Length: 552
View 1 (spheres, helix red, strand yellow):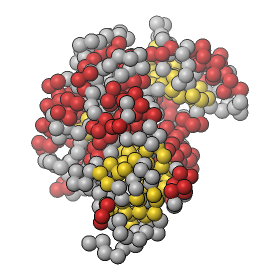
View 2: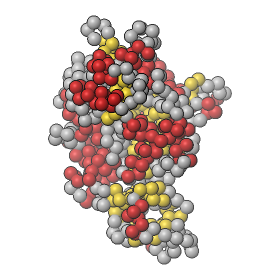
View 3: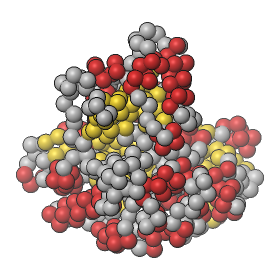
View 4: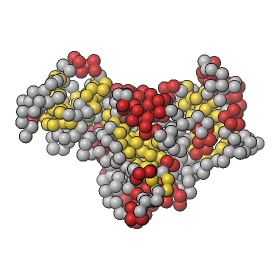
């Protein structure tokens, strides 16, 4: 019994979709010390320090994004945006305009260009002419490649051949054997080494900017998919930037942080502990609190579909009919997954092509056989091309796929060109996994794709490309299933299902006010539903003006 407790906050006259099977809908919700203490009759009679008459507005659990790049996204606000460029000439012109406003020798850092839209990559010589003496670093929208100018190639030791190209990295050469400026996968670390690490203050500011956007979109929890090292990392002390943002009151979102496998190293623990590979002091998945916590170890197995570097069993239908590549040798990848599993980590394996998925599933199976951990929630990030026979292996091994539904809209047409008609139904599956008993959490991979959860839900339901093609129509799901993906299932894959994902007594008071329920509008309108207000820990982090009119 709650007794005569005085609540911190009470919502009344609301249309609450709890996503909790024992109490699926409610009109009243009580909050105390950042947690939900009851619904409807259990709290209706209680006094509260603040009461909101919601006027019949829709309230749902706070949204989660199971795979995004928060600091990377935040940094794009200070970079030249090339996402609207449709030709390389537009890129060069944008670089020239941007360079004119910079101090001498300052870097031109840009992001978002897409060669599949422009028909080609920019070339270092074109960038030389556009930027003059400025170093230039153009990041591809996929994140798996970049183009730089001659200055950068020289200072990175690429032109004179002194650079040691990391395993899994590729320097693209022209017909005469000279670098074009295009660097793929791990070769990008030769460029980032000239600028990294970023300072904690700069990263904290980027995280704050991203967090404000997330709150406005109803996101109350996100998983940052790779920190600390490798081409994905921003600093060896990247976690400290999230702590700094929180301490400064700038972090409006709960964050789980995946650690890049490149940040882990050999350990000399007792042999009985099986901790031969990890972080100092034995830190593993789960360390932290409800606001900032370590998540999985992130390991890259292959590349990207956009760049045709995903490892596939059958050649791509364009771009030279290649079969992609691995970031490390299969034996090294398997060893890292096995050792991280044995040490107590959850593992998130980036595997897009079906051959890379085979490698990941094989590694998970052998790791579980050697060191059984039946409750661990290993994951395969992206799971871009999944054969029918692989779906059953996901279910049998208890591995969760984490695909990005918005890719279907934003890059679905180029994906069709890459995989051809025989494989297009295998791309970013959803319903088939659900029918096999496998959860599919919602995620964006932002900034590679738009991060709005409601836009992602619309893509889950429609599976439509920007040109109107429906990819795998049998993989569509209902709006209710899409909402569950971004709430219940996003919490589950993070290991947080006891604390969030639904609105039930004892769970965190993270919820969102919406203008409509996703299941009550036309599917074309799901992405246009307005996020009116967002609450984290029972406190408003977005939409204060609306909440003020309701009584808070």
